[in-house]
Amino acid sequence: MISHTFKTKIYYKDIDQMGIVYYSRYFEFFESARTELLKSIGIAVRDIEKNDIFLPVVSATCDYQKSAKFEDELIIIASISKSPSSRLFIEYKVLADDKSVLATGKTIHGFIDKSGKPKRPPRLLISKINSLINNES
Amino acid sequence: MISHTFKTKIYYKDIDQMGIVYYSRYFEFFESARTELLKSIGIAVRDIEKNDIFLPVVSATCDYQKSAKFEDELIIIASISKSPSSRLFIEYKVLADDKSVLATGKTIHGFIDKSGKPKRPPRLLISKINSLINNES
Amino acid sequence: MISHTFKTKIYYKDIDQMGIVYYSRYFEFFESARTELLKSIGIAVRDIEKNDIFLPVVSATCDYQKSAKFEDELIIIASISKSPSSRLFIEYKVLADDKSVLATGKTIHGFIDKSGKPKRPPRLLISKINSLINNES
Amino acid sequence: MISHTFKTKIYYKDIDQMGIVYYSRYFEFFESARTELLKSIGIAVRDIEKNDIFLPVVSATCDYQKSAKFEDELIIIASISKSPSSRLFIEYKVLADDKSVLATGKTIHGFIDKSGKPKRPPRLLISKINSLINNES
Image (cartoon, rainbow over all chains, first blue to last red; front, side):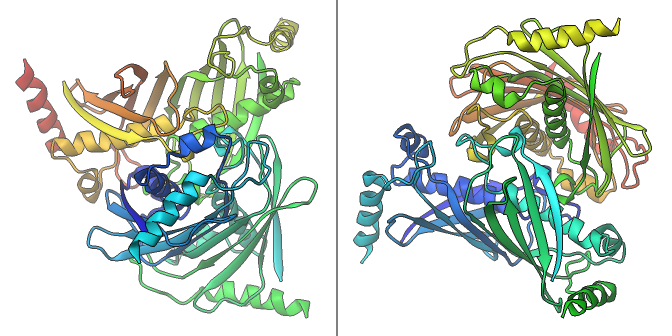
């Protein structure tokens, strides 16, 4: 499994009138966390896009266990445990400062060109992920 | 099944650099659609909250089939097909102007008080939903 | 003066822990309102962009008088009273249901191409605005 | 003058279809930056709110000079140069990695209680700011 830890802090913009983080904001946190995960293995989303490959989300899920509040600092662990084929699977765990689990989630991504036509995943992405997953065993 | 149709229009704020609606925005559309669904059966979220009952999201999912673009008008059909017990289940279908399906989703809600303690769902909510679901059969 | 009235409704996504609309959301409302203002005089932002002209915001201001709450319905009046030269000036008034003023604002827009180079404003835009402003006097 | 430097990174969520940061996002950056500015002088917004004092924005302005792009790292310098009376004035400068100025802005804040009634600014806030401003001269 490839993992990366991303930290973010909660501000007023994230909080709703229940006094907790509004549910859609977690998907923004997931996006930041996966961008950094890919970067940590040498893949800049910016570079992938320069080669006319985009990774739209085809499915997104979040399960919320505990709520986060204003000025909380969150830890988001993004991880990849499966080699990408036509789909890339990414999983997320959101932790509070005290390491208790606030939420878990996953996103599934396709590979398309600017016009929206499906493309093969970038070879570099596959080889990087495969080498890192296999190194573990 | 109880259903309600909500319409929204896509503006610049919703669009990312792929030129399509950013994935987390659909969860905002879902929220607007379910607020209007509940209102259509006589339940104002505002009034529920005055009775110290809140409906936090405990799970949220969206599957994206086709992308939406700037100035598109979207139709979001929110529906409830199950009587709420400790959880309320709501489903969503997002359609383009031409009625093609852009996305489907669901959210699951708990019932808590302001302090976060679980509460029973409001009796009015249950009776309304039950009467409308049963009227159908 | 050219004016257009746009309506929007406040949902949970807009509200912060003070129980009022978060301040940056007004700029999203302004954007929707000005897109509809331009559309009302026959100018689709989508079409302008097809001709490689973009209207980035170069300045934005909002003054907040009264706060808006969950499920409030807001009226946003966007207006243009000056012929655009290298800049387009748009003003906004946000009203509550009872017509009391919640906020006022303005945005100033430049004209650039995709690469960011300044461009002249589209001739159609200028002539439309001029004819409508002059018709008034 | 009291200053604090806050850093943030741009992700997909921030970018619009011009490929640049959407204009309202800067006001979110301002909010994060001022929360950290106040924290840096020993004032937690969270604690102020526990004493039933809230600092709503009564005016917000941003002037945009250069655009920011996906994966850019921004520096936001928030500063206070005036002692607060019934209003608190905060100024912002947004810099790119190379220190070129992307945007400047300011926000003005009132002091109210939960019900919306004006309050005096917290004594601690005034004394902290005054002592820091005066220490400079």
